[in-house]
Every structure is written in C-alpha cells, then in structure tokens.
Length: 266
Image (cartoon, rainbow, N blue to C red; front, side, top):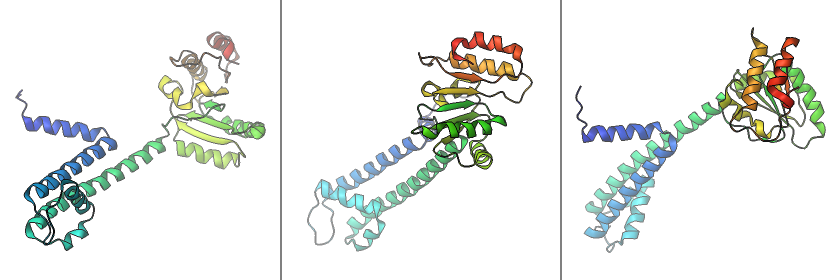
C-alpha cells in the first residue's frame, strides 16, 4: 500500500466530504464559485479596458454587474459586440450554465431528501401541554377518541404518538378508525420508545401527561418498565414530576413499576 498522499487526493477527499454534508455546504460552494468567476471577469474587463463597441472603459463595479447578469441570463449575450468582450462574456455565461444547473440539481435533491426525512417521522415535535402516547396497540384508537372528547374545552389540544410504525401508516389508520377528532390534533412519529434518543422526539418534558401502551410481545411488561426507566432517568428529564399512566398485563408487575416510577407512574 502506497502511503504517499498527492495534492489531487487531498482535493478529491475535501470535495467528497463537502458533498456528504448535505445541501447547505454545496450551495455555499456554488455561491463562492460564482463570485470568483464574476470577480475574475470584472477584473479582466476593467484592467484591459475591454467593452462593447461604442462604450467607454468599464469600472470594476459596472463590469462585475455586467458579468453577473450574463451569468444569470444567457439571452443577454446575443446583444454583445466586440470579439474581446464577447469571449469574456461567453466564458462567464458557460460558468453560469454550470453553476445554475448544478444549483437546481442540488436544490431538487435537498427538497427530496427533506421530504423523505419528514416521511420517516423523525423530526422533533414542538408542542406543549400535549398528551404523549408511547407505543401502539389496538387500544390507541379508543384512547384517541376519548382524549378528543375530553379535550373539547382545551385551546390547542394535541396528541403525540411515538411508535415502531411508519408515520404515514399510523396517521392513515387513525383517520380511518377514529374519524374526526374535532379540535384535537394527532401527530405521529416513528421510533422505539425504549431508546432514550427517541424520547426527545415526543417532547416529553413539555407534555401534560404520558401514556405507555403495552406492546405486542412476550415480555410486554418488562418493556413498559424499561420505558419508565428511560423517561425518569433521561439526562434531560425535567425537574417537575411526570404524569405517567402505564398499561401492564400482569398485576404482579405493578409493584415493580411503582418502585421504578415512584410518584410519577399510575
């Protein structure tokens, strides 16, 4: 293996890292490249005195403005006269075609990536005073209906559901099985409630109450207790006590859940 690193390898490595960082760095690099092309063309026009036939010497600011207009709109190139001025403006226009086409592709990819990210349901919920439902089973639809009725006198009621299902599927099933929820807004997010990193998605610190539903598994009560531990021992947990309602299948596990959740769990 050759340990020698060439200059071209470093440049390629830097470019690869830039492309992997997302849309914003690419837009910054394209803007910087456009500025360099415009300034080089403006300096060339200003220092050499190249201009349209019948026009006087262009200042640096005016030359930069002309170059920018040629970069953004290639149609203006047809009215140029003087071969020296034409060649410089042609180079600027070709650079603009490259930059604009690349920018369109970057923006399109960025929008598609953002839509895909939103579809995954991984964005954080910015709500307060809401009811957070962690987990999902068939009882969730009954709970949503009852909460919608109870929230009729609330100003901006909201129910946040965090479960191991696709966000779009959860929202579609909620609309089909629950129907109209009145003033209550139902927001679904995808993620396992047993992972601390996912708990922040539901904004539990701002929640009025938290409902833990029993999952469809053999160790359902064990998983519910683990979620209680994750909430109460989260590094960013609030100072005020949580109001947690947990669903257990075996009555013998209620004592363990009470010890784990202390005064925060029913």
